[in-house]
Image (cartoon, rainbow, N blue to C red; front, side, top):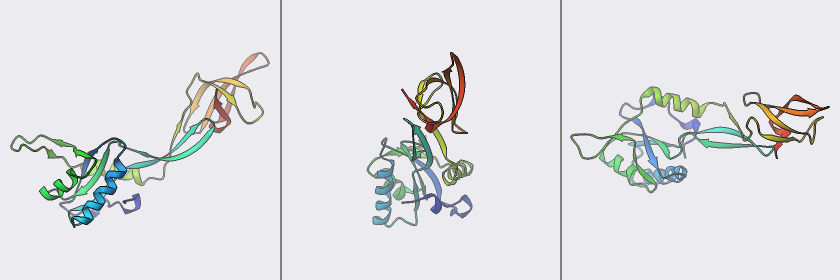
Length: 194
């Protein structure tokens, strides 16, 4: 299994090795990666199919007052394969269980669609995103939603979300306090949906 530390940079790629996008059945990207790596070894194609990658990034999800970290697929239903394209390597990838085909264009001279390799700039951007240490924050709270405060001086107060700032991990809640609505800035973990 290829991880972000094993990924070749563009400069290290052999001349005939290019990255291709392979379409898979939804939710089977990891299984296809495993099956394809097994096929590469059993068919002795390490010299023609160098890497198989399911691009992912770290995502922190705030839901129901809990913080959870998970790996999220950048392109659900797709994997990337670095390979030297010929009939045998095409056949090995195309006939791996779970693969539905390559992202390709029609070739007017040939009845078989021609797989289109990624441009160097495209793969550099994808690899940079996979290798980066940045974590995306995703919360299950929206403006206007009613929440209960679970911590701090306003514990058990009910209020409506006025603003969500994912970059800071904060949420502003309008709380009725002494007969008037007062904005209170809280951490995502300090509120829960009602």
